Image 1 (cartoon, rainbow, N blue to C red):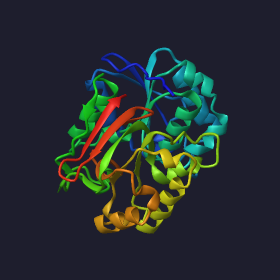
Image 2 (spheres, rainbow, N blue to C red; image 1 turned 180 degrees about the vertical axis):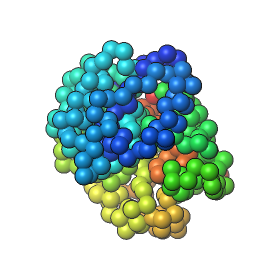
Image 3 (cartoon, rainbow, N blue to C red; image 1 turned 60 degrees about the vertical axis):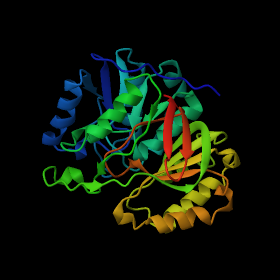
Image 4 (cartoon, rainbow, N blue to C red; image 1 turned 120 degrees about the vertical axis):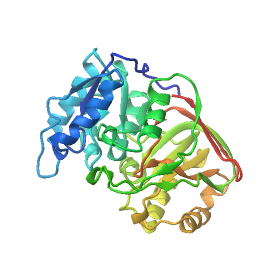
Length: 328
């Protein structure tokens, strides 16, 4: 199936910030100035949904408020991109209320990660629109070590060429937003290959436990001829990741998956290279699928941006693994 590719961003374009999961209310007034200033310096006009600051006891807002902001953002002809404030836990509440025809008839860039995975993969299935797993509005508030994240955001939503995803020189695994000055970087050793081979196909995925919320619903995208990108956060221990991956493997169409790309785990997850290799090797369904791990996406920083519904090629060569984004 051919999916809709939204127009790339250019200077002067309007970006609408909405809160389909956690509210903007969890961000301090002082912090909000940083992403606003950075996006403005990039040449964009930044506007906000009417309900982004609304917040209930679940640090979110009502379904109707979130749907209003989502629909309004896509219907507004001046808006060229929609950026989620941050992740959270409940964006899948919106799925039965979204008018996917509005999104299909008004294709534009939609970017975020983590809990936003549910919306992005549902939009691909119901509206045939490519969206982007990448930095949220809050991510643009990182004072230090943001260069790599910004580089791959530009490659995916501003530039129009295919590109290779190279490992970041260094990364952070900490609650960076709690202390922006005392930053600890870790040298990145690069990707490693668990299963060798070549794979090419449509990119599906994002946050694994959130993607799995779509199982058994009309919102689960087609896994056939796909390259699956998955990651999870510190709450996903090896046992959780193992069973979540197994659940995905058991979905219809997984037997035609062409490759698996796994994002970097947080140290608090207690996942190790040895445990991840063990998990992958114990699954016979993955025996003939190329698998590359420790890629720069997930809940460590920096992160790449990748197109859900775009095309990727992966070369899982033990000495020189490569990931290329062909269509975005």
